[in-house]
Amino acid sequence: MRISFLTMFPEMFGSFLKSPVVARAIRSGAAACETVDIKEYAEGSFRKIDDSPYGGGPGCVLRCEPVIGALEAVRGPESHVVILSPWGKPYTQKDARRLSKEKHLVLLCGHYEGFDARIYPYADEVISVGDYILTGGEIPAMAVADSVIRLVPESLKEESTEDESFEHGLLEYPQYTRPVEFRGERVPEVLLSGNHEAIRQWRQEEALRITRERRPDLLGEEPEEVEYLQVEWTEDER
Image (tube, rainbow, N blue to C red):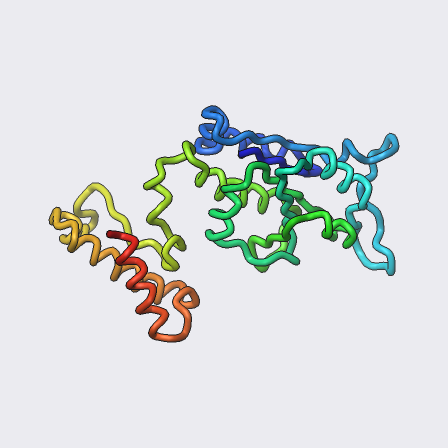
């Protein structure tokens, strides 16, 4: 997989590209990442990539010419272009799975008051990482890239990504490690029993409990939806 970050601030990606999982994927050849400076596609000595909005209002808007110029310079027949914007649909683990199968992912980072609206038709989709505002699209782009790269074959062991929060429509069950007892709190005995069927059942029940407590919206409103998730989880575990 190849990932291109189109950004005004390529220096922001330095540490991200050196982080363990991302760096390992790059070294192994599972992923290739590049940063493309949108400013390089702006005309004039000042490389002006933004301007005041028509109709008035605060802030500045990213101009069409440099953004689309940068996009057209990297886009190819196998490219899938994503704009990171509050206009987008909420990003989910299913999206991460889907995007991990793309050969070339282009992540377009916004800034200031956002993009000139004429830029959006040049994207294949628009994604939002949440209902809040950041100073730019670089952090959302890193979040999307991280979630995608870890799913690319050879980045992580496949079993490490199969049984996680959101993969079965639930949050992940509680996890424990040494010591067995800490400040009076013990690891649940079932996890020490060696009984794999009992452990599987406990994990399923705990995943449902945690999801009900912390993210009931994931379960839906109808009891049969919860029952369906239980059945789906059980079948996937077998």
